[in-house]
Image (cartoon, rainbow, N blue to C red):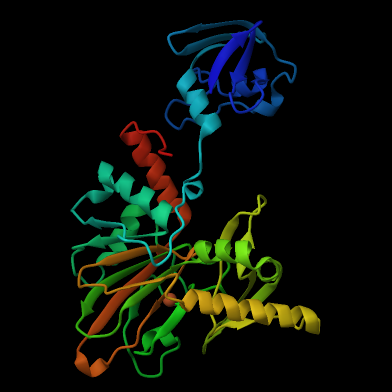
Length: 369
Ligand SMILES: [Fe+2]
């Protein structure tokens, strides 16, 4: 893909598509002279909707990767062609994903170092996070609330009804089964919240028990398997909005959503799954029969050895996982064998994406394909 000047027009030459003229107003909006854009905030100092809609290019020339344009309103600006192409080609982080199943040979892992959040390695870690939906940091300092510093070094903590952070250990009379030693089947967290927390961080402070293995499943991978092999069942899971509900002494939280949510391009956008909390609406009998068949199948797939990976979080490990894509669970453990203690919290996707773009700018990197 490249940019050329053809008869005073700026044209995008695209080998895989038809060439097209880049609209002069689109270019004019991107002119960044000192009188047009604040040099500190990079924000426009004018309202582009007030520009002449019929603005034209008076003069255009290309020199050494720079595009010089003079517009009919008198504004002149020199563009870097690479920046224009970058904006046109740019992919969002979530477009670079790699679907995986239990054949995943190596978990994406990085050894934690002080100040890692400002280093280039963090860029690669976040890339891996978007590719695989999770990443494991090793040797994170084993301090009670270190996870709060950790989360706030990437973005901002999203508090929930469980607090700013929460302690995953077995306690008497818990308000959630996470706080027991029971096995937890694969699930996504808090599907009853609006909005649903995006990324979960789990920091292992103690894990002395023989059981208590962590499990992960790529929900997008299972969804694509269903789309390919069970079209009707896939369809009903993408069309049926299920009610998820959480109740405790002081709050009742509810939200509706599909077990597999698609975006406008029919790509999988988010999965929701929590057998402890889901209530399907009273649909017509035939439709419900299909839904129940689909839910049974997806439940089996989520729990199957074809899709599930299982590993033990060691003391100092911090698991960062995408709660819109991955399901997580754990095997049961015996509290009499020793301590198992994890601290958890949530952050938003725009925290990690924002960090990724910041590191990209800081180290002069371009988005990797
Ligand atoms: Fe959970």
